[in-house]
Length: 202
Image 1 (cartoon, rainbow, N blue to C red):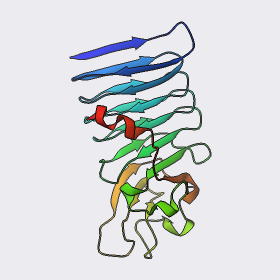
Image 2: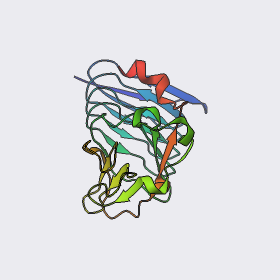
Image 3: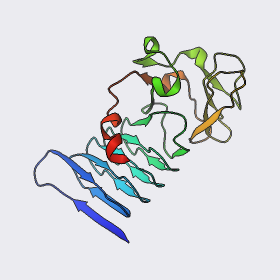
Image 4: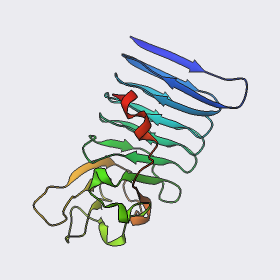
């Protein structure tokens, strides 16, 4: 069964909704909106406002709508739609399965990664990815390459050791032909808001 939960508040504020087991559809018309869903193949629609949407164990669809939204797919092969505004797509580690970001904008949007989950030291956190750690192509070409964007098919990979023996892992599918650079990826050491929601998502 699919549960449809529509929430609209008559006053401006911050709304929080959490789905349970099963397949949920959560929608908020206005306000700033936080939602997490633990299980099922769920749909979250932020509507207006600056929203925080976190998926769970299933294959979820997260749509930020208007505003500066933060989307975190967690496990499953999720579809992430930032919508209009400067949006943020969070990744804890490279083994969350593959998320499809349908509308990533190199002008407005950011991919945010947790330093410990991707093997970066705290000394390089809270800043953009180093230029030497980003590569356009199908695979790493030197030992420093960590994130590889294939502009032909839109695949985004993480490689833990560049040209070493560890295979690269695909973490996302973006649009093709993006003028993506290291400036589109930001490393954080702690304080990623998703960490507070992780226990709920499980």
